[in-house]
Image (cartoon, rainbow, N blue to C red; front, side, top):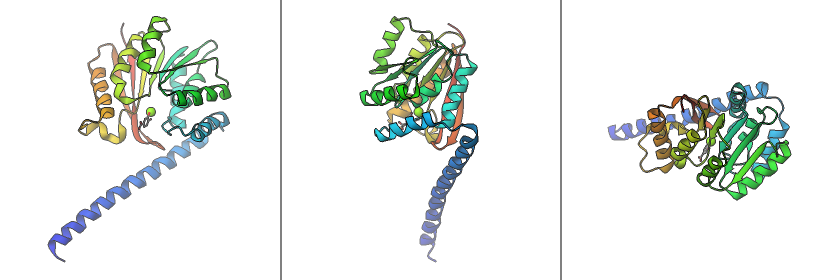
Length: 246
Ligand code: DHB
Ligand code: MG
């Protein structure tokens, strides 16, 4: 075979192999996710109804996975969290997982910018029996957060950040203002298929995540770690940080 054609063929094969690897890995992650979901998550018709209603309403399927939702619930329980703040409600799937961890009298405050998502979430909270324990505020989180501070609604025991990633640096700043030593801050989507180590090339999402990560690294009031995750949502990760000082 002509050497040039041969080189092209080898390069094509290598690209094809990479694509197949990605697909096979995703298939494997999905199977393992289902394996654990099937026997660690009880038949959960309440949350299945929430997802169904979100799909019917046309919401983007960006909610945390069932196993990740349960992780949030377990973290909240471990912290005996009474006051929880969530930035980014979407259809309220993670909100309900968090609310399930609450002791009597506890509450989740959740912030959603999109009116349409908020309406779907509100109906979901009612359906799941959490319309009093969950307080939903509609509007840009950067408008709601200063009001929440003025109303003295903090400090929150657990803060989950899962909204528009470009504003993550500001959300981190507010999370710190609304916390106390011992509070835990969890941030979703800090890995982005590994793109976090690529040059951002002006991508505001990646820039937001990277700037926030740098702030966390430089923040003396936070001790943080990152956990990479694979599963039905692909390859991503969380930052989990604990507030160590005022
Ligand atoms: C996106 C947002 C999320 O919160 C998530 O968990 C996954 C993806 C996104 O905007 O692409
Ligand atoms: Mg997310």
